[in-house]
Image (cartoon, rainbow, N blue to C red; front, top):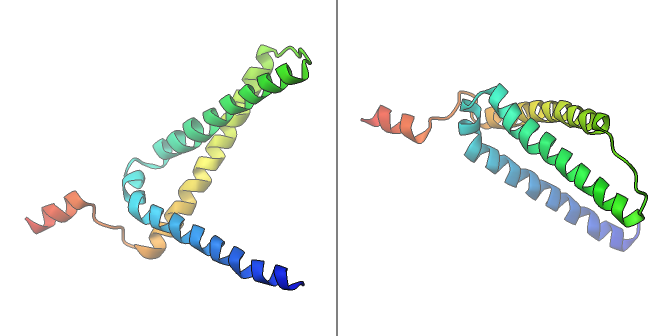
Length: 126
């Protein structure tokens, strides 16, 4: 390993650790509210709608642009649109489920018994 590579290695580790800490802080700040919406709504909102449909739209936009750039004049069928929509929805469900479990694991590691929301905290004081 050269000297330059040795200097890069700790920097990459620090960036990865910093990213992980930022992600964990985001989970600590937002997970209680997302958790209260329930797993199904979370998976649909963040997996299917945000990732699945969003990726589907980006995919077809890129396909149209590449088709125009290459002047391939490829025809797209309704079957292709339907198949890719189902494909991205299924992977959106998988992504949303994995994201739910990952966030739940991060949150319960710091708050094993949950965390009171501000309204719950105010009710218990008053």
